[in-house]
Image (cartoon, rainbow, N blue to C red; front, side):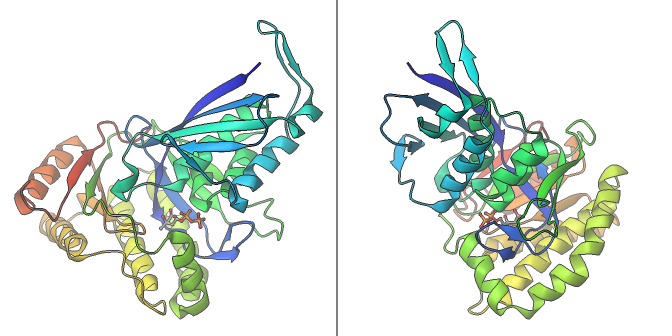
Length: 349
Ligand code: DP6
């Protein structure tokens, strides 16, 4: 027999960034972070997990290609879910699995992204959130979302925030064992649904420096990182939560842009410096800054992760349409600088 479960998780975009770990193995961050979860129709991972006594080992396929499961991160997630597994009974198929049997049962996992991995947008966030969620479903794990988020965190830090929709805060926690480092929902997906998120794919190349190794280098060499984590981010987190709760776009946009810029300043402050943005990214920042300045109040926020692609958040659908027109004007389709646009129709879950 084979028992299967399928799940889907969207990716998330941080508006107050996570950059730097205080514990590499447990993936514990140096500061809190806040993100917005995207609509699963646009950027998400879909994962099917199957368990059978006929499987001699655990195996995984990503977008149809088998990948090695040697990494500790995958094993941590699987181990934590297995620990919490409960009895499962499928009367129709005549299957009865006792909770202790899950230790001996191997799993096969097939995961797909609904966006091209090569687009440089492939985030481990959706993948690990989906893996943990779906394994939990298969093994009848009954933990709350906070607990699941702390397991997903051990796959990839940003994954802990993809367990929820809407705006989500990852609380860094204080405990050495990571038990209080988990995500909580700030507001759900219906709270601020006029926002529209546009992703401008500046380069479809894979990033040169992964987030994991980039942030390790920053922790070891950037004096700005310590200042940011201890002095700047705590105040920004409070202000960002307020802005989100009050749907105060002006504060939201100022904080989002400032935090993206400080994160990239930390990257430049790293030795050797890390350049995630390129000239096109800088041109997009100028375009938005000039527009916001001309309007007197922000209309669009920008944020960039560990790559050159721009995530643009427009205050409403009308502004999003104008933004797309401006982007198309500045970067005509024949301009190879900008590969494509991805417009989230209803971008917030
Ligand atoms: C710039 O979560 O990919 O996107 O924990 O090592 O897997 P690991 O790193 P990852 O880092 C994400 C960094 C970021 C900012 C953010 O999402 O908060």
